[in-house]
Length: 174
Image (cartoon, rainbow, N blue to C red; front, side):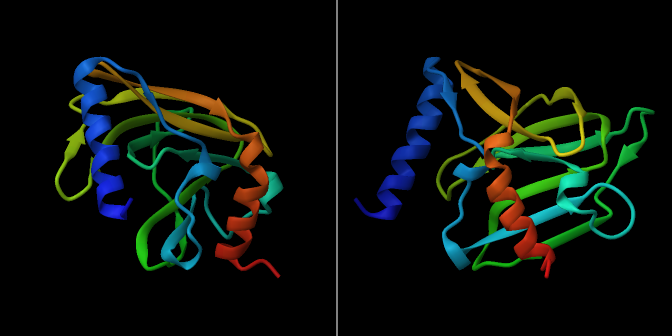
């Protein structure tokens, strides 16, 4: 099956599931696109200064269609990535990980995808509060069901070795 046909079938199924009520679940950080040099690897640092050792921060990843509209700290202050490091691939999409100091953060999240013929986006955002601890990984999952979508926060610990490897490549740890 050629790539274009497979892509159209996938997004056709996705749109069908949105309309028909079938639930659709996407994967984990390790399931993200990672075909060698074709796709980018992105690390966002949500704290001031240089990159902290991987083990001293918490890492949040998310399914590719998810878009973070805003992040607030426990005091309600809006946050933005102080540093974005990228190991560029042929495509700008790829695996993204966001690093935080331990604490509680509130994410406002929507979704958007487009494959050239089919597109879909959230009409309303979901607000999710997550408490993060040092050395922890969390993954935000996108679910479709009927004409609604939802967001879950799952343990991302199984992907920590892949995240660390990507982090080392992007940050160029010696």
